[in-house]
Amino acid sequence: MEEKMSVENIEEVKMLEAQITRLQAEVELLKLQQQDNHKDMTMHFTDKCKDALSYMCGKRQKGGKEEVLSKLKEEVEELEEDLQRQSQINGISLNSCTIKTLQSSDNQLVQELCVSGHCSELVFQVEFQLSEVKEGQRSERTISSLNVVMDASDLQNFSSFLSEVEESKDLLLFFRTLRAYSDRCDDRCRSFQHFQDKYPSVVSLPGGSRSEVMTLNHPELPGCVLLVNWSVEVSREGGVAPKIDLLTKIPETALQMFPSQAVGGAAEAFQSLLRILGPEAAIESMIRAVSLSQET
Image (cartoon, rainbow, N blue to C red; front, side, top):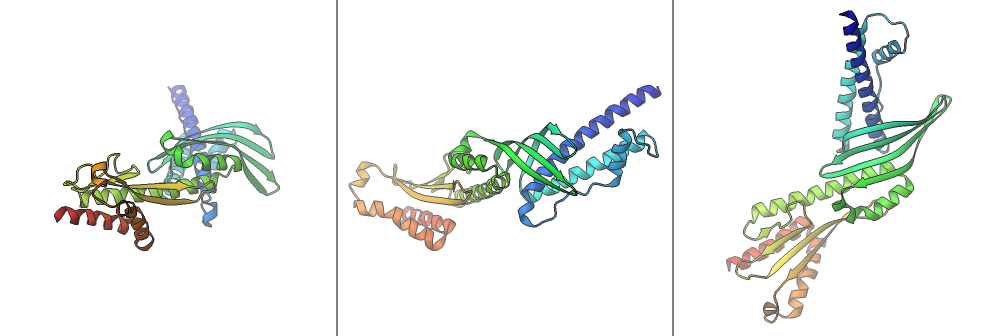
C-alpha cells in the first residue's frame, strides 16, 4: 500500500514539475514584453519551491513527500496568478508553450520555444531560440531564429511587417505592434456596432462588425450605396494607423441625374471631415446626412 502511494506521489510530483517548467517559460516570455515599460515584472520565486526541488534532486530536507507536494502546488498557484496578472496587463493570452533544450552548460543555455496564443481576436504562433549567457553574476538573453505564424486573414496587413520583424528578431516589437493593431481593430468593431445599433435602417455590416466595410443605404434609392472602408495599416517599422475612405456605388441611371463632380466630391468632403472631426464624428455626419435625406 505504501509503495503504491509512493509511486502515485512521485507521478504527481513529476506532473507538477512539468507544469512549473511550462509556466516559468510563459512568464519569462511575458516579462520580455514588459521590459520597455519600466515596470518590474520579475518573478521572485519563494524558498519553498527551491527547497522542494532540492528535495527532489536528492538533497536532505525536513518533512515528508506530502510536504513536498504541498510546496509544489503552492508554487504552481503563485505562477498561475502571476501569469494571469501579466496577461491582463499585456492584453495577450498564451494558450500553449513548448520548450526544447538545445544546449546546456554552466555558462550557456540555448532553448527552442514555441508559443501560441491570442490578442483579442488575433491568433498567433511564435517560434524562436532563446540563448542565455552567464558572465559572473550577470546574464544576457538573446533571441534568434524568429518565426511568426498568423491567421491568413490577418496577413494582408501584417505581411511586410512580419518579414521585417523576423529579420530583425525583435520579439518585443512584434507583441507591441500586435497589441496596438488589435486595439485599433477593436475600436473599429465597437464603432461599427454602435452605428448599426443606432441607425439600423441606414447602416448594415455585410461582413459583420469585425470586417473593414460598413455600408450606408437609402431605402428610396435602390442600388445607391455609400461604403465606409476602415482598414488598419501596419508599416514595416511597426507603426499602426487607421485608413478610412468613403466609396460610392451608384447605378449608371442615377449617375446621369447628378453632376460627376458632386459624386466624386463626396469622398473629398469626407476626408475633410475626418481631418476636422475624427473618425467617429465624420462617419456619423455622413450617416445623418443619409438619414435626413431619407426623412425628406
